[in-house]
Image 1: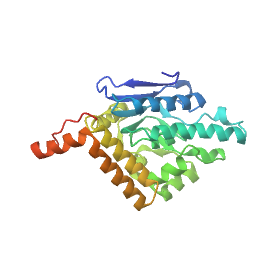
Image 2 (image 1 turned 90 degrees about the horizontal axis):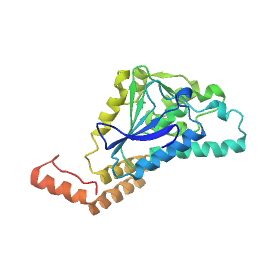
Image 3 (image 1 turned 135 degrees about the vertical axis):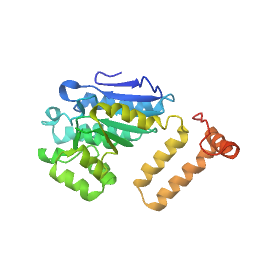
Image 4 (image 1 turned 90 degrees about the vertical axis):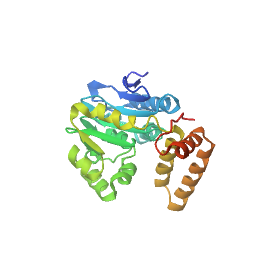
Length: 263
């Protein structure tokens, strides 16, 4: 457990792990230590077989307000090469968690906070949430995945609008353009996020991981390569106990009755 980031089990759904970012005096801004602890938390939930789904949560005031500008303002080019690599690697570790991941967004998710939210499979936002990539207002561009993950999610034109302007997007617009998947009352953000991923905790864990990797990797390449990724993942699942269970249950009991072991 880190100073600013900890992993907790949801009390009502222990198979759902919560990566809780808690640096309240800085609205959870991403400094070097927070970045390191996020990477460690991602590694922990990725390898823990008891964890079947993950919630990213920053509390009721803010998801993550952005990067720690005070820490990076005076860095040299050489220093920023290493700093940005660590930041990108930490967020990529979140994106590659082989389980369903949802970002529960209250308050600000700006800059690095928006980029962290982009690493989740789903995003639930409160009505007062604000998202955006305001780096252009600092004379720079997003450096933790925003120029790559944002256009893949909402399309290049909308991504360019947000990146070129640096404007903050209200929850209603974020949902309309596909930046978030669900908008709920602010006090319901956490519970709605848990409910969303709790749907998957009884599913076949290896198949869910394969589906996530096939989709994510496929988006990074051409169609033929993506189809080959899918074929290999699909075929590989015939080595799992869950495939045998699922198909046998379908034949004997009909669809939707299988009880999976995650093996």
